[in-house]
Image (cartoon, rainbow, N blue to C red; front, side):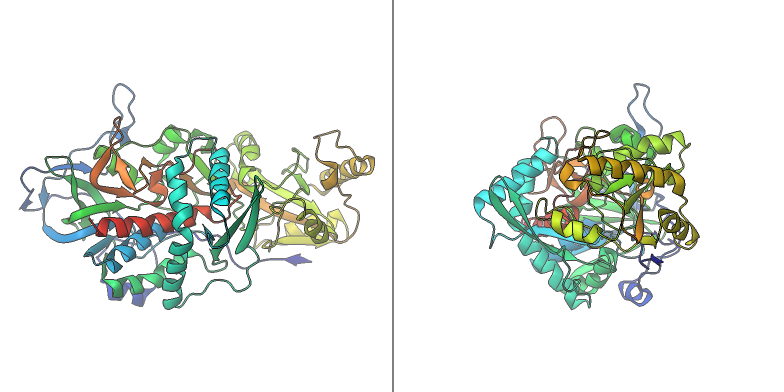
Length: 550
């Protein structure tokens, strides 16, 4: 038989820009989304304020010297149809933007949140923080050092420390807002509370978990709460340009709304919360070329905030940027069980490393002419696998498969593969049962010998696959690109820094995936589950309060 989950990874879809929705009509419509927003800059009749300069979104030709087009500002918009005055303007209504807008409003500022899509939009299932009530200062510092090591020592320590110091408070606050909006965290979720043992210190982590719900629904539920706090939302209103005064201070943002150019002035500051750039092929090729084989899983992630920040004088952190590629089936299986490729062959020394497995499949996809299915991998286990995981957790707490929902069973390897192939609704994965059986036979020989002569795996994790039912767990790493985490240089106050001199640009801030250098390694570290969203919410929470107080 087969055990099939009914939920899939949340994918953000942009909505039609046929008209600007009111805030109330947004919540009546709910999460309905259709075609992509057309972000076109159109000239109007109102004159540009004297002494202002602009940095515009859009695409143009690369320069003769090879400078990519996204680093070259197109011609600015010089006329506006309307001007709206605010103290803080937040660009983007994902988790980081929603947190920034709501915290700024609660601090008393007059807030506008402009959003490209017709609804709030986010992704992911977990948001992690550090429980400082149980974690010592030394433990916190050990965690920060550990994350920097995982980032190949390229992280800005101050950014990680700001997350560690404030994440528990920020996430508790965000969870309360979601609860007020009618969405609760998963009850009794085993991954919500974790303890890491780092350099002899215990680090207590806690995560808001929304499996089978997702943060896309969370931000939609929080929007009315933020609105009550004073946030004014403008949907189907894509940002086009940042506006600066003669000193270089950012004083507002120009958006396209219902065919008109609207200037949203920001007397205290603009907070960019526009997400990543996975849907801009030129940016991907320039900053993260090792994901060219992987199609984007999100929509409208075109790096608008990155571009506007650069054109206003900022700088994007150096290549290569960190990529986040999960199993697209949302079944975390970080275990040292036998793993085979689409040919049914063993190809690695298995270990708890879901976040890094994409590096093994890239060449498979390339050889298959870009067919993402060539990046599928399959865990092969038998009836003893959950008992083995429970035993191995005492050795390595990161070993886990508690939320694995998709797997296929059979009294033989052949039957398990056939059950998987017969499931046409969930993928109809085809795996050569004879090849898998030959791999299992070889693996069992090595287990009996107590020595992995093929890949040198720790004998502790070598267990024979010999007890029915036999189980196959499919993984779609070829379709699992969730985010590219690399962005504008910022300081611990989330201020965007000027290129070269790295001093703050007055009035400009960035949070979430449009900001860096929180990470730095080739791959997103899954050692702290939910770190990305936890960092985004915390950054937004801090930035909103900071800008409101200016």
